[in-house]
Image (cartoon, rainbow, N blue to C red; front, side, top):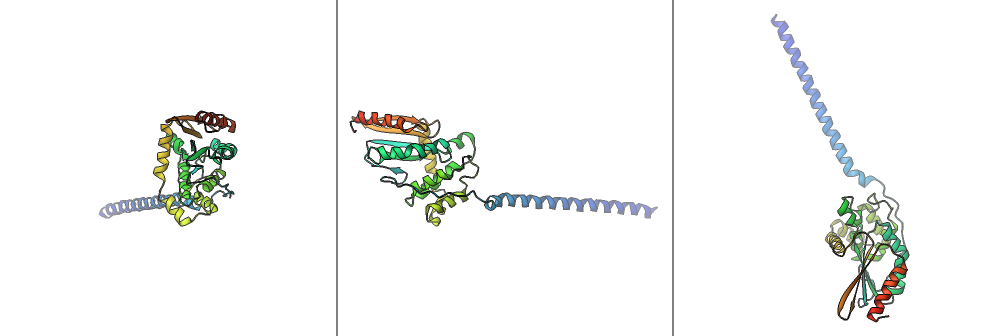
Length: 255
């Protein structure tokens, strides 16, 4: 009788031991799988191939100075709030901007400045930060007098799908290489977030001036000591800008 009871107790102990051993094995397996998944999530973006980068021959800008171009003493100042992922901004860049440069910037009538409003969408929808990162990359390139070259390369390398890999950190660096930047200097600037606050300030300025979408143009000029402003919204054709600018030049007597 005692032997039988002892055997049953021993059997129960062995069963409990097996359950504990199985539980430990399951726990270790789950921890291992979790760690492997986490490691994959961290490494996957660095292992995934980036989209092909297109090299573009950037045109020279008249009296380029950082993100500005044109005569600093021009009678008209124009600020564009833009987004490197915005197809309408790209349309302006491709179709209208060259004519503005030819007839108004290169002739000393307009001082033009680019400012970023790419994070407008991110701030209002919570979707991605690639536009903000692209703007920071352009400003970093400006440290090496290559803002406009980077500007042109970013537009041509936008893949028309927002926040889907056009301007990841790795691809921005690949684009920067095609521009001919000193990569150590550029990487330090971009990775260190040197221009993150500038991009935020750009957005605050855009919103303060009534931004509802990009591209958005703020035109300022002075008549008899009074500063006036005009707004041009969207990717308007050149003739819309021409009508507005000619009217301003007529008003200030600077034609």
